[in-house]
Image (cartoon, rainbow, N blue to C red; front, top):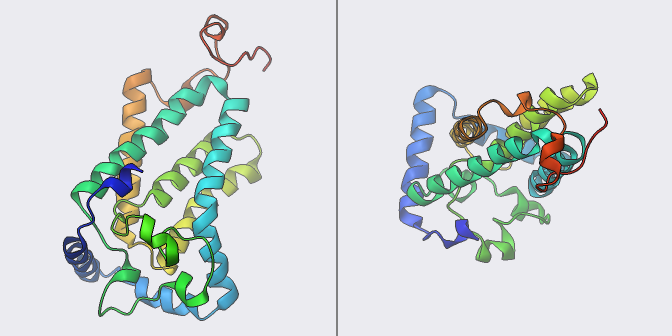
Length: 232
C-alpha cells in the first residue's frame, strides 16, 4: 500500500531505466535482454519462471518466518527485524528513484513474458498493473527477501541439504527476475545493499547478530509475550 502511494513518475522512471541500462553496458554486464529472449523461447521454462516470480516471493518468506517462530523463537524478533528494516529502507528507493523495469522500456525490445504467455500472477502485468506501482523496480525486494531467506536457512537450518537449498533459492530468484525482464542486475545489487542495512539496524537494536541470539526465549521473557519454549 505504501509503495503504491508513491507518485508514479513515468518520464523520470524511463530516464532512470535508460541510465541504468547505459551503466550496465559500460560495465559489460548488460546481458538481460539476451537472457530474456533466450529463455522466452523455452515455453515451459519461462512460464515456470513467471509463476515462480509471482508466488514464491511471498510463500517462501512467510514460510521462513513461521519456521523461525516455531523452531528458533529466541532469534525470531531480531531476524524478523532485518526483514522489516530492509523493506522500510527499500521504500525510500521507490520514492526517490522511480525506475521502470526492463519490460517497460521503449526501443530496447525486452519481452514482457507474463503478457506474451498469458500466465497468471504478476502484479505488474495485465489487469493487476492498474493497481500496482509500475515504477518501483529499484531496489529489488525479490532479491532482498530471497537473500534474507537464504542466509537465514543456511545459517540456522541443521540438515545440509536444507542449507544448500537456502543458497540455491536467491540464486534462482536472481535468474528469474532477469529472465522475466522485471529487473536489471543493478536492481539486485540495490536489494542486497538494503538487506545489509537491515542487518545493521537489527545488530544495533539487539546488540548482536540475529543468529547469535539464544535459540529459545529466556524463561523470564515468556511472561512478556514470547512463545513458551523450554526444550532444546
